Length: 168
Image (cartoon, rainbow, N blue to C red; front, side):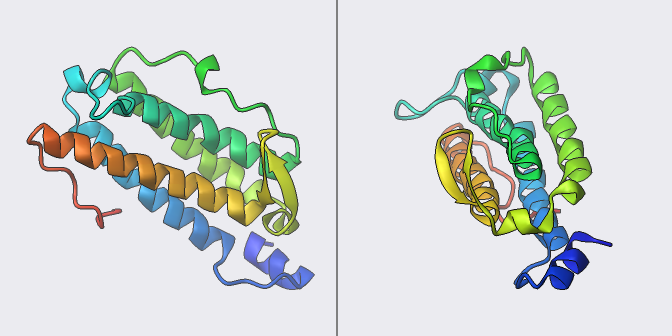
């Protein structure tokens, strides 16, 4: 039985199926990957504007939440949030490899989220209280926010960024 069928069977209301929500998120992830690719190698880890962090650090924050967040939704057991505990990648190639590994892990883990966890209140990473849907929307919104910063960086470098609407 798929997550959406389980949710229907248990009486939880559905506005968007879990499968459609994952595809929506993965569309954003495809666009963020294009943003990483668009950065010059020498700027990805060093360039910033107005005291903001370099894009590579923003990407590491996104990665530090994605899989651990979904594992927390699955199990109800959340690790403490600590993006500094993960070694920084040494190159754009390594960062893209981590991005791709996370994408595959999300695809594998997503069907394991129990349907009731989307509506259940929990405390993510020992810090933030909300429902499963809230956390997923936060992960997506946080990625969009940081991708917006990357658009500013690329434009300030006179690099045309990928179209914001192209999630293919």
